[in-house]
Image (cartoon, rainbow, N blue to C red):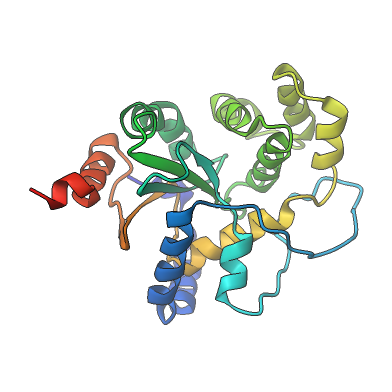
Length: 253
């Protein structure tokens, strides 16, 4: 179940639905193709400037076509990149329901499907900035951690400490402390956080989510061999049933 507090406003939801409705089938097709081959880091030159302070809100992006958006909207993958089933989450680090999902449901998914190689898990940033003013910076912070190969450790640290940094007027210092606690180079992490680095990717993830009809977090999608479905609830049982429904084993029964 998606947290009621973690949804965009009704007016914004209607606007997003109108924006994405005509291209929805095309986007699911492209999105599925990308998920099937794994998510790769794709360079995109948005700006050569460094603002000298931590960018904490989405930036404007121009795309020549849908494929350019898909290429930049980089999800973070856990598990076998060649797994035939992809479990996708669009999530917000400041969303309480996302925190619950990350700490209770996701470990079950990893133990049952990811560890066995049956599925890979892909996380896309979808910070609801109108509701959660620290969420965009948190998403950037997690990608700064990825620069030091510590993405998933930092990802979990943010969710475990969500109640501590969510209400902070300026959470950047706390984010840097978490990096230090995990053994990262704090100077490198701080330089990344106090810039515009990764703001383009997080902004593109948000745009992709809206184009796919995402309006709340966490939102879960299942993709396997061209079969894509939105899971109606984010509890473990609903996700497990959706995975089983698209598993090659189930098609042979």
